[in-house]
Length: 275
Length: 354
Image (spheres, rainbow over the protein chains, first blue to last red):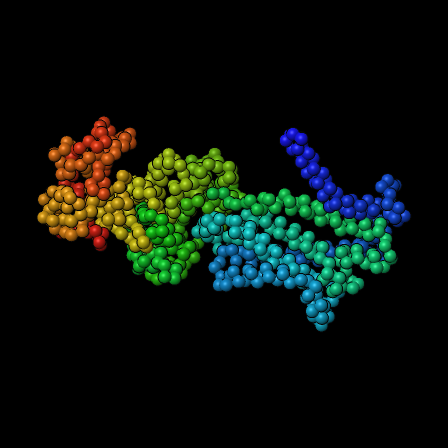
């Protein structure tokens, strides 16, 4: 065959590969999305055309599933984690970025190293510790765990954004008459804001989706959405339509946040002060 | 308005000495330029005056006050940075107003003072723009306005013109000169550009290796250099420096012997260096001057012609009239201006004064 034909064939093959890849990624998600609107029987019949119903969504919020409670727990845990993590991480990131600390590289490495510990390894010691402290099945307990999980991410991400602020700008503010705190409040924070928002959303998503610790450390009152989703299966057999509805409720906020991050992420990465 | 003094100031990082036991007194309202190549310690010195670096030892005084332990914000200095250090999230107005706002100036005072500063640097139309919508020259003027809005005790300027293109640099130089004359504020100005130093300074401190090589007026630096470094750093094209053995008033360079004028202070010196600026060497016919040599290069710069000759493995450049015409390899004579010849010791690099 001619080189031109060969080229066209190659392009076609590439397109097919891309479509296949997309299908593999998207089909499960689309399936679940569709299942959320099906009646139970339609799910098992694998129907593609069906009359959609909405009462799956109202059922999951009612007894005995009480998704509303779990939604509340997830929201509180994720939001409070972010509200506590970002200010502390910003302070740490600023210090790492601007001050010459002794053993700085070592400290940063250790902070990152905590991420290398598999959750499975430490979840049982956490259980024992929480039991003794009376933190089992509490939102406070979950918040503490999530803080420990997201803090290293937050510090590293925010440090990256602060590193991108030219030191000239801060020194100018110092000479102009600011104290160090004023520099942070008036100059650094406004300039790093896209980065802080990005880090905050990143941490929110992590805390929202956190499953293992929530599973082990909660039982009744502080159960979050991902764990609640798993409980569907245990309690009533395989109610896929309800599970799918709950899954949609969990996923949709995350999609929205991820879209927001995507826009700010690029801006945060390429930001730098004016020279 | 105040003087600035450095008394035996050293800044060291481990064994590396950025500034090495230097003392300097800048009079009230003086425009002092710290001049030198990269790494000579000039910016470090300025940052110590600003309070952005702490001296390892020695005292820094503003007026009669020892300010070593004072924060930058308490020293009442204003600084223009090389990269301007503008606040990108504020408008020009916000940038200029910031020093007043952060020091608690009453709100009704801020507006008029910002407008006055903007007018002095011709920025009035641009007050509502953000820095990213400004050109380099405009940003530099914002940095200037931000510095002058407060009428501080001391101005510090860290290579403020070096990021501008050549033409703009020349026009901003004149504006800076005018501005400093109008404001009458003690100014410390850092640059590596010797033309900026010569045109702006009341006095110049030429620095190298953390030490001040010479402190004096631009005329003194230019016409009476203390060391080889100062002699070669100032002047463009650079001063000619010819190495040889000085014996009985004649400089032996390789096979040649250059008969020097009797007015020179030293007649015998092993390892001497003769200095003469290109404009102090005239091109004459062979046999009519102090040196005869073949033309190595001819360069027409527009306002003058530079003729370079070879002396063994050294070269001499003479600056002559713009209509001067000589051919390469032509044999010519060079006449040295007796009043502007300099002798240095090759080893210590110090000027020989007899």
